[in-house]
Length: 410
Ligand SMILES: Cc1cc2nc3c(=O)[nH]c(=O)nc-3n(C[C@H](O)[C@H](O)[C@H](O)COP(=O)(O)OP(=O)(O)OC[C@H]3O[C@@H](n4cnc5c(N)ncnc54)[C@H](O)[C@@H]3O)c2cc1C
Image (cartoon, rainbow, N blue to C red; front, side, top):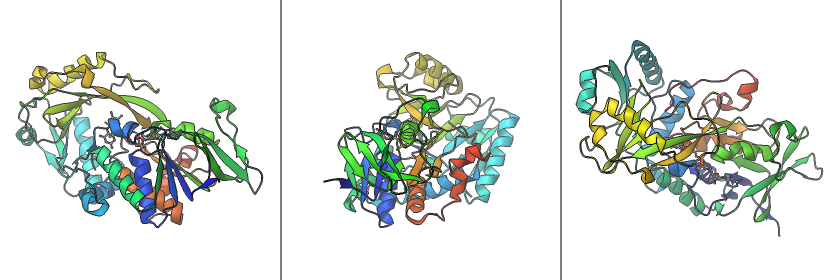
């Protein structure tokens, strides 16, 4: 018997799980989620820092965050599982006039879009929040108290458990190996295992539409495929003969051993002079810095030489951190899914009817998972969404010269 589903979601990370939940909320429950790993969260979701913030520079990212942070604040009630949302805030610290102009411009945009609690802080205000910070070159900063953190694994599980309670099916250990298309009733054209270079990609014929997916467990017949494959999304798009500009980029995080020389509670602090940022994680401190020399690729191993680089930035901004112990074996690396304009790609593929993208979060997929799941589910079920103007995030923006640009990337 051929397996069928109204909608197949490829990938069960936080994004695929949110889409599954929001489809079920729309009454669409004949949904099958396919995940190649034996457990959920083995992609980028399980590697995330869990930061959520409305402090972005573009309207669409601010709107996505505003909706999502509000959702996180009532997640436990609405979804029935804990999100572990902690409103500890994000504090951006400016060290030159350009930073000040940038942060103040962003703050005005954020306020105009309803994030009214962002405020400008003086160096004196900043040092009250984190007394151990070296502020001699800090000129001020912005603070938003409802920014903060969630537990990505818990959010992902909450979405999926709720979706499954409503009838959504999840197949673990199931790799999608091909996408079958048909053209106006003709025999399905299988693009299975089409892993060739883009130049030799078989582009689907005009009028091509989804007929099903090939998996390691056999064929699944469906009219709708949602690509939620994170950093691997371009490979899935290619299986359907579609182009998707999403590229993997390694990010590395370093936790310290228990460290009590910083407050028990403080915001995510971002040093704009270097991009170094840090927050409390249990008894220790989680250190982050995006190495500008990192190059794209599926590199998920942690590079031990990163520790010295990050500790240099850490000690320069927070001198007491020079005393923090670090065990390299507890540090980890994961993948951002980067797009050329650092905004997500959400919506239908232009050349394959029934194929939808929810990809390319460029490091913001956890914080934007509620909004992107709702947006994608509404586009699939209704063809439109009132949440935001979805055409802004369409993949066609690149070909049409409508790229956005997000510069507030961590
Ligand atoms: C170090 C680090 C820190 C980060 N910090 C933050 C942060 O503070 N805040 C934030 O918002 N975001 C952060 N991010 C980004 C965030 O983790 C991602 O944007 C988000 O997890 C993407 O979720 P996803 O569900 O799209 O992808 P994933 O979690 O990667 O899920 C994709 C899934 O697809 C599956 N898959 C792939 N190919 C196939 C196939 N052929 N068949 C079946 N299944 C397949 C994979 O196994 C995987 O489980 C961070 C990322 C990293 C690496």
